[in-house]
Amino acid sequence: MKPTVQYVESKFDEFNAMIFDGKLPKIPVALSNAASYVGLCTFKTRRRPFRAPEYYGFKLRISTRFDLPEAEVEDTVIHEMIHYHIRLNGIKDTSAHGKVFRQMMDDINRKFGRHVTISHRTTKEQREAALDKRPRLRVVAVVTFKDGRQGLKLLPPVEKKVSAYHRALMRSGRVSGIEYYQESDPWFNRYPTSSAFNVFFVPMDEVRKHLTPGNQIRQM
Ligand SMILES: [Zn+2]
Image 1: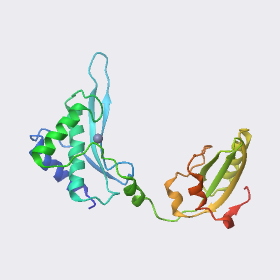
Image 2: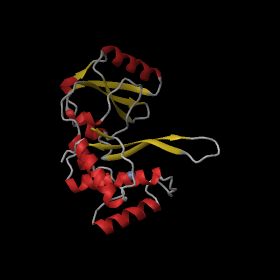
Image 3: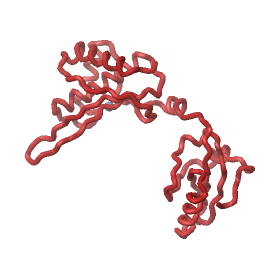
Image 4: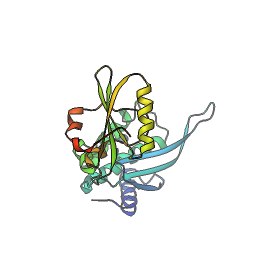
């Protein structure tokens, strides 16, 4: 299911009454398209001398990128509400999912027959499935270092940016050569595109499978 703001708000109210004795003040719900999380409870911290830090500006963020079963969306909301409860009450825990968190989680699971887990991160398969499948043109650079290592860089298909990248890397003295390909294979969507002068060391055998020799371009 793809939850809506209204749906998440109603679940918050439901679990607040059922699990948290209605003691959690309402917080804004924000939906996102994030691939890195399913749920997040964000907040701001105010620090003053000689006082415990104060937490405020709580927000419940839910990603709608994954088509999860309803029970998992509910468990995600509960997971974030445990974080919220702990922060709100200034309860010290041993870590983000420390002793206090686990105790509350286990109690809730037992008492209410839930399956809340520690890792609300998505599986590799879910992230793959959520990847953007649209073809997008970019310049794929294969950078060969003097020590024999090879790295990958995705550049916007803009001549000025590619030549600036080329000059900067060649000037570093560590690079022996760079191949450039114009590719629009959505497989590359898993890596970020930027004009920063960096390189990613990723499995190059896999990368090569997605490069077409006919798409190689001369250095721009
Ligand atoms: Zn968590």
